[in-house]
Image 1: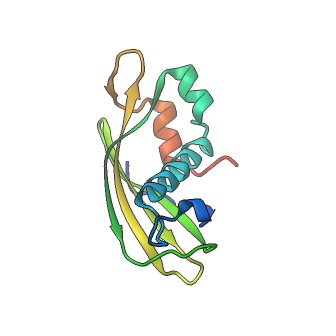
Image 2: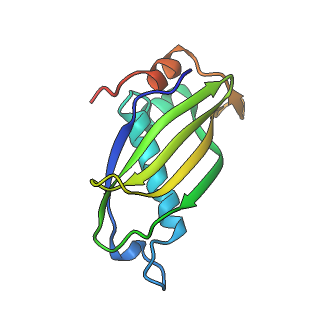
Image 3: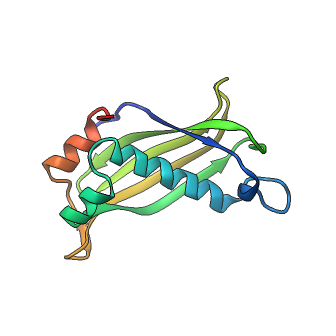
Length: 139
């Protein structure tokens, strides 16, 4: 699979996202990235209901993050997500936090797989998953 369209997911930085230094806590960044990935697959017909019925869903194998600029309280940004590649059982999604002015605050590369919940192992995307990862969102 080749690189696909970029999807955007809006967030707003709230008080409970901050650490003792007034920075967005690194755990909050990971949570935001997870929310954006679920929105990415849900908008393509592979949300939690589909995962439960098919017994196959995405799992994170590795996350590499680079914090570039400080996000501030009440700041609104978009988390942008894009599948960069998918070969066999493993894919790479690029995600980044960007404001309206185009400034990037954090970048992440997420290595993903599709996990068969019954067989407890990674599987190659079937036709439904392949189409969902390649196509534009349905909503």
